[in-house]
Image 1 (cartoon, helix red, strand yellow):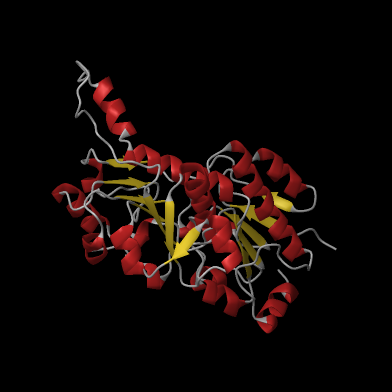
Image 2: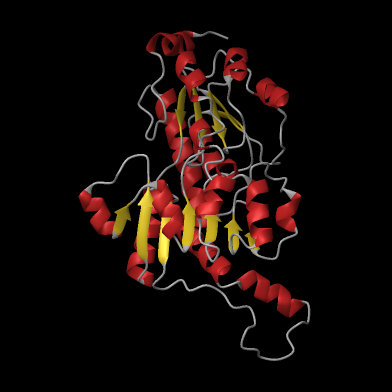
Length: 336
């Protein structure tokens, strides 16, 4: 039986590349070249699997141009780069990497919350600019974290991990809104209370966004929602940039409608809406919530394990769709 052919879209952990080479023919991209969509399709010719990094669009056009492709594995928990309906109809198994980055991302989300609330980056810029001349009562006054009210929009694994940190580590009152309510046992473990979205926005001292980007969730935080929030509140986004209307956010921050924001994701990343760059009350980081060596290695490995499982005729470990059986059979029967 011939070995499956795999394309790795960007540079990943070398040990995972070596792992895949033990059972597959691998074309890597350790030079970390950003291929255009046309170039990606060209590189995928004759490939059975794609290990993606969450930024490569996998849509109907790509799938039609790559009839041998059987599996696509994101090494991220998010998969808004996948057209899931097209993948399902085309018989291609898609997968992501939940769980392995949960605690790391929750750590970062809480760090971003604290940096935003306590104006840490503002303080560093203030100091580096030589503006600190003496201690002053009113200098860089921030917002309390301990004992305050945390609102979480999107209560999946990462949201729950943030809730536990807030309630058990910082004595915070935790409110959440999600498309489905957690079980009583999970609510008790997280010490979190379910409320409707409007109540969440009105009551939160700090609002953390941890929901997936779907057509329904696009700009779910816009001018109307920001107007409901307390002027002293902070907003933290570690989900996806498209969740927030960045134009409305800048206006709220400029006018004092909102105290501050911490953003790890952006709608047009890596391009950043210029208004955000001009504001001192925004903490900006380049989509690094999962960026520890240990977590990134686990993400790569799980993506590789997902690819191998599918190409060996086994179920994906963490699937995001159920491929059409007839279409999937056609792809496995395809001859170059």
